[in-house]
Image 1 (spheres, rainbow, N blue to C red):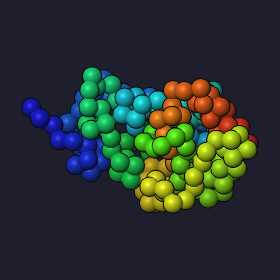
Image 2: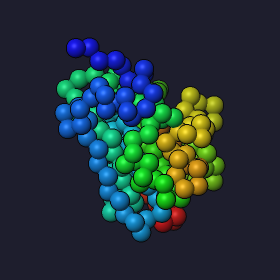
Image 3: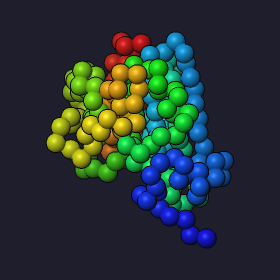
Amino acid sequence: MNTPDAKSYSGYTDIVLHQIQGKDYEIHVSPRPESKVAIIAPHGGAIERGTSDVARAIAAEDFCLYLFEGIRPSRNYESLHLTSHLFDEPQCLELIAEKPTVVAIHGCNGAGPTVFLGGLNIDLKEQLANAFYASNISVQTEGHPYPATNPVNICNRGLTKQGVQIELTDQLRGTALQAKLTHVIREVLLGLN
């Protein structure tokens, strides 16, 4: 039986119709009620390689963590990549509903090790951009294909309706730069918690 690609899905209910939790994908939720920050990787596991690892490293024991992880033997991106403005998995929505700060970790293609910042939380984007600049990590906040300004983008569905989307090129995931990157992000977010 052929299943449709995720690009034809209109929300999580379509994933449930065509994919099996525990066989095709897993959901991991670590609520930390005392934290004001939720770190999410809606395209984790084998969907966007390395994003679960980055999200876990940022959250550590300090921040809430949500992972939607592809575990299929192949075609994870094609079968499970629900675009961010359609991502409405109920456990994720429940976790972020009461959190003032939501940071979504994504992976993207790109030339060179670059961070692309999007989302409606302009202040936090600026803080992160300044921290990346200070650490000599290439960052772009405007003029890129990942603005994440749609109000229903999952990063913007927390308590304040203003989150941040962090897109990481392949050269930043699973490399020596990953530890430096996660440290920079954590330092900024610890100031908010």
